Length: 386
Image (tube, rainbow, N blue to C red; front, side):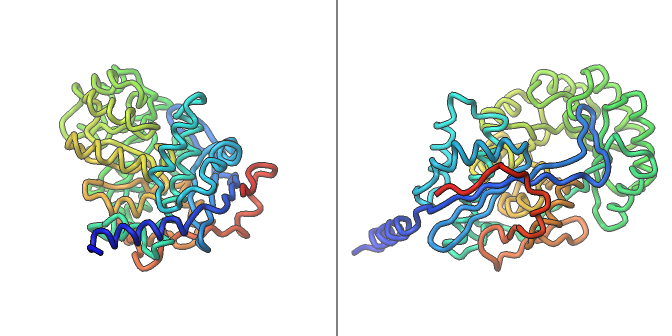
């Protein structure tokens, strides 16, 4: 038997030995540590929807940040489609899930639900192979740069300065704040942030689509020329490709325009790139179809010679940040850092301005602390599918 034939036979044997046996789904709502808002939204809690997928005495874990209704979509629609499938073929499962939700749509809540399942399937595959995900995907590095993210518009000046200044003093060389709630006050808030972090820390702003094009152009020039801002995120909403390009083409030199956190499908990222709307493409593994979708976004960014940045969920993005050499950084988002520290074991260690991934543990290296999470569980949502 040739080497190629032998390898193919071994692969066939391996995959047929790992059918998916059951899927567990749950939702947990965790209050924020203070009221929070950005340019277009206010919130006081965050919901994590979790998925555990079982096969051959291994358990893959994935999650998304979404309404608890995503757990209903997973339990009622997606999990039955995944059950008994080959656990070694997450891409094939992803295609099947996207095809099955055609009539209900492949964006929004459905994409969030698919993302959680897809992450769990990739984690399971790596665990079945007894490999870390970074090893499975061929990571060229073991750490990834981060930026501290928070600075909510609900914060007063003291809390804003304390949070951003605290990150800067702890060794994170770049931080981001929210703008857009009261545009007339934003230059002063940005000035407060600059004073808190000093001159040698990069300052980013995120409008969450709150500005008009004229506001974004005017304020962008103030942010850049007066306060040294180098990153302007979503001056217009991510689906306003023309508006983003309009602002980008008229913005000051030295300030990158970023968008893409609401990319649900590869087509959404392609539109931003083809439309010349961004200097840096963003993607979120908890929204874009999981690891499968994130890798597609990365391939598109690479094809257009545009760097990629990961949005939120740092515990999930740390491994992907190591895998993708063109990943500029990932978002060390206050809410998610807090939740992941509370409810997960194995979160990547922060060393100054980087997250360092342990490649000696299988999968993503994350374990869900169910007992600690129990008080936050949303009753009557989710369950086990066999």
